Image 1 (cartoon, rainbow, N blue to C red):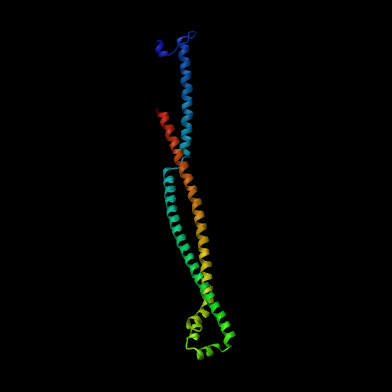
Image 2 (cartoon, helix red, strand yellow; image 1 turned 90 degrees about the horizontal axis):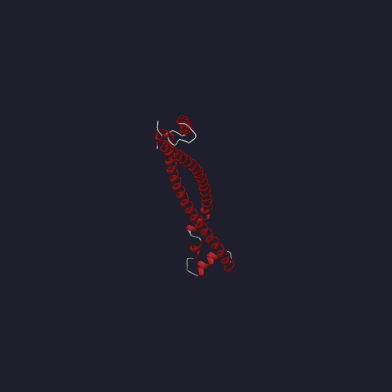
Length: 202
């Protein structure tokens, strides 16, 4: 056995001693590799199965679709809420017009007396009576409180739906973030295992 076969031989050791030293080094290297292999096997056993990762990705996509649908429903409810606000504003404008009409009637009563309608019809052919006593104003008087109550009930219902949708969005967002973290952790662990396997095979 020559020096090339034994490697570097120290001056104060025999070829047998050099061989023993190399065998010890190889044994330590084998022990290190066995420990690393055991660690890799333990990590592989803890890694979620591929089917689990695929199921998580499917659930994530389903939650995305559900979230998009919820957002569209929320936008529709917000549009309904804005429309209800416009209807309430219109109702308030009609009520203000009715109050103004009553104020004018009181002023006419002060000027022409309690029978101001008959007096105005005698002195002027202008349709004063019809201006203040049209079927529209009569129907407004009877329907305004009912319309106001209906509008308030609609607003209350829309607000409940809006709060429900916001709660659903928060729960979906929390679930989505948890799924994202789980998938990212699984992918990161798989990447580390693949890198270690490549390093061992070199």
